[in-house]
Amino acid sequence: MLKQVFDREQLSKALASSDVWQWGLLSGYGDVETAVDHTVKHWNSHNITLSSLDTRTVKSKPVFIPAKMEDDFAIKLLDRFIRRIYKVRQSDRNRIVRQLITLLKDSGKYHVLRLDVKDCYETIKFKYLINKFEDELILAPECIKLLNEIHSDLRSNHDMHGLPRGLSISPTLAELYLESLDKKVASNPDVIYSARYVDDIIVLTPAGKQSGVQTYVEDLMNEMELSLNNNPGKYYSNPSCSAEFDYLGYSIKVESKKDKPNNVTLKISRLKLNKIKSRIAISFCDHKKQNNISLLKRRLEYLCMLKRVRKGKNGDLLAGLAHNYQYVTDGFECLKSLDGFLCQQLASHRFGLNQQEQEKIKKISIYGNARKRNIGKFSKKQTAQIMRAWQNA
Image 1 (cartoon, one colour):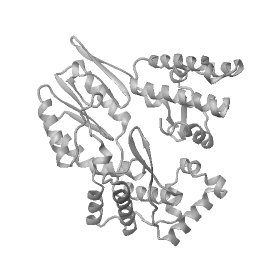
Image 2: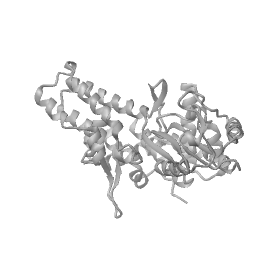
Image 3: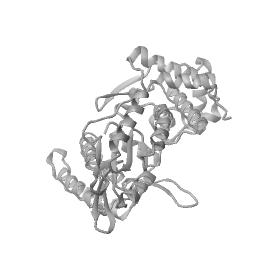
């Protein structure tokens, strides 16, 4: 059994580099170890009692933020305990994409259903999960106490009964709640393949069986007090031989070939391209306020270069555009439009870049960096500074 103790040893394991910069541990405490000691002393003297959560609105939905560093770290440690005890893991996005490509190449008569859980976090009953933990007697009393405190604050001060977006614990609790849905969908004899990534569900059925399978999934959702999202862009139903839909950031298109496997093409979705475009615009707007050309350059490079997350014996663990969309079949041609957008911002008089500054930025090509899989070096401090402007984008 995992030791569920809110002490120095366990907290040190739970902290990430993003926590160091988010809470200013180095400037405020001198080093991480001192901040950890301070936090544990605070917990001991206050019996790990949480303050009311702060909120902000992002894309018309409330996002919850711990009011204090000590609260955030307590919730992070609670999340770590639940993940490890219940062996909660998010689905492997790249694995799902690989499997989907293989299946869609099959020229048999199949049907694609793309389904989405509507307002997933908000509709999952927090109290149901707390009752589950209390009945199973696996989580420590201190953990149950924290969960009840969060739930009580949400109910009393925010009139909310679901999972709070923004807290580190919510993705873990959502995965735990939706595990039974995954198993039941996969067990249906008319389901050839099914996968879920957060609230996005993909299902392949034999042709003609899709309606029955969709009804089955909707019935399961209703039993769990969830519902299907029928909004355009969130729902798709079509024969696999001519499927054309967005999933996990890709725009996927299938074309049938006579007596040959289907041709499957993948590009970065328009929604994702627009998100990158938004971040480019925000970067220029922030430069206008800060007048820091080096920071603008690093932000634009961060958008399109690979980053080493961790070094390993079998190769480095990478992150970034070229890695996250490694299965595109167009050689990242779709990114050329972003280079065009970047040039437009560069030439715009409202940002006031002089000739020398423009020349510095002109050397950056989003398409070129992704195509060549160029790797950039970004310190933890730089990364925090870069990301700060994009918090809600």
